[in-house]
Length: 227
Image (cartoon, rainbow, N blue to C red; front, side, top):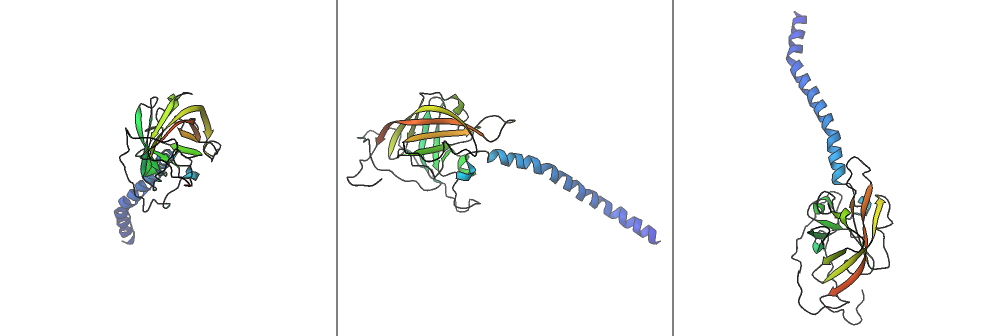
């Protein structure tokens, strides 16, 4: 009698055991694809250079601005900057090779990279002396970055001025190589993205280093004002 009770109990719980085991197998099978997707979402863009309000993006405020397109007033070679806040769209990048206008946000995060290109807040504001570093996903806004050639022009329009750069050098570097994204004394623009090679080296970046060609500030710099 006791054996029959045990058999009935085992028969009753067996479906639940099978269900638990199946769930465990499915969960384990999904972990690897999820990790792979996560890896692609955070592929590049110098993770160690990103700046965000917190590790979990708590408090991130995204601000989309209307950027001046055709300024008709007097312009100046030196002028005043309008410094953006983290998460603020403060420029539009255009280039014939890219065949599209790309919004540029100050700071870098997965949320911002879904909306446009991102400028690491460790680099200088557009038009200032130093290295302005901008990146975007290779499967979205910088999909055609590999079409850039030496001599191509990249224009960055902001609400304080318009800045034209000329491609000086096409570059390739690894994720952990800071050679092209570190600070510089000259006024330059560095744009980059991941190399579009799904089955290749996920740490490889491609891009361009550009020299400033033209600066048009909308407001003159006041006498005695420090940068």
